Length: 309
Image 1 (tube, rainbow, N blue to C red):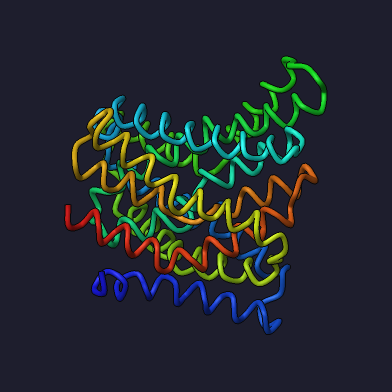
Image 2: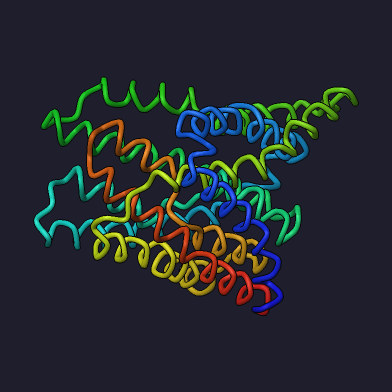
């Protein structure tokens, strides 16, 4: 595990650098917002397009993989929801707590880190995990929040969900990349160099932005945040491991990548949604802060375990 920890340490060191810059005021919240926007809309999109343009849907899509990850995630999602309901939290808050329990930082942390640590072949499984998180659970949270507020389901909810998916640059870049691959078109050398240079900014930019954004997060409601962090860092990868290794056996390498992706800390976009809807943003931010700090150890342990299996 020590060797794996040393390999993951540089990634978390960049996060720590961003955090320190944010805490000292050297990197303001406004600067962090613009850096995040650059990474989200340009650098990460270029990286994802570059990866997927050299893949095909047949190469990356595996129904057994999707079934194992989705089923395991739903089990943890329902468990966290039930615990929230037992605590007599409203449906909207329960939905966001459940989101914290299963939605990891796959886009900003998982794509760059896992493809470097586990090899470029990891991109296919990582893309599948990212797609399930964005399309299924990203849609589910909007449906639950809007439905709980309106008291009913309406066509307008699905229109909102559809527009949200179409405007998500990660989904757009993945779809465009796979479409380019399906057409069997080569990427011209200048365009390839452009994507390589721009995509190379995604890893340091995303990690620094994660750290800088954590500097403004609160660590209040520690007991609930601790439970949600435990759900994300321990229960989620544990459930995914059981599903992918025993219930619906997935090819070992892909299963390992899936488990590693499930072990990632709570994603920052959960906080963005919580803030947008005005539902438990402090609780979500505390979960992000605690899970990210703890993941320095837990992610290393999980990657060391799957590497030895």
